[in-house]
Length: 266
Image 1 (cartoon, rainbow, N blue to C red):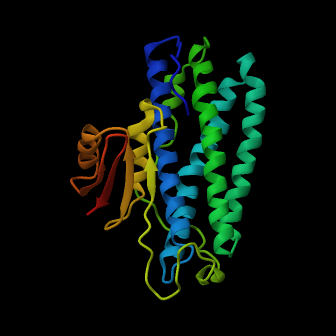
Image 2 (tube, rainbow, N blue to C red; image 1 turned 30 degrees about the vertical axis):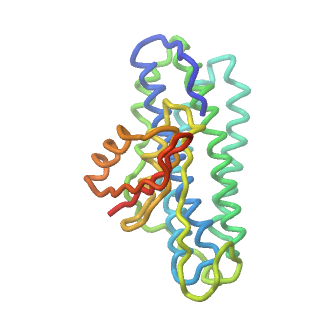
């Protein structure tokens, strides 16, 4: 999502709705990226880390991703059907939605760790492309169109759950296998890899929301590495408040080109 263009809207409420939906999508994408990184990091490890990461991704798809896709198909696309310049875009988005569903199905049914990790990454890329088009092309067109109350429509979109229940189906038995590794030694020790989020290329308007989503995916005792273009003190205050103070921060690099921080959920 670029989100750098000025949104021309028929009302202030519709303009604010575009920003709200963009922030929600950024949280969704940030969390999906972090969950996918956890799957990739656990591919070559022994123990339950991969199975846990696989199940968590499936739960997130079922409880967060699919409801957003369904809301887009049932609410946003029909509202945009009457906007002339959006008709071809909607056809393309429906095709991309189908590709995302195919990737999600492969994540659920595949048993090879490397293949599962590849499907998770494919889903992330497809989801980022689709939501980016909705946020940067379709929503501004709706905000500009007369006769469309975008604020009312946005109020009907589902919230992204902060906690996930168990997925409908657990991964297949072969998901317990080992030896397809990237950095795993098979000796029973867990890799110390952790998800990394480099926000330097993320538009400022959605940067904080993306970090919120990524940190939401970090389990208690887990960490993520944040790479920022400056010391993100205001963001750290927001994260601490959002997590109820369950945040520990360690600086691994302090500029001048990048600040690298280890964020741990305590």
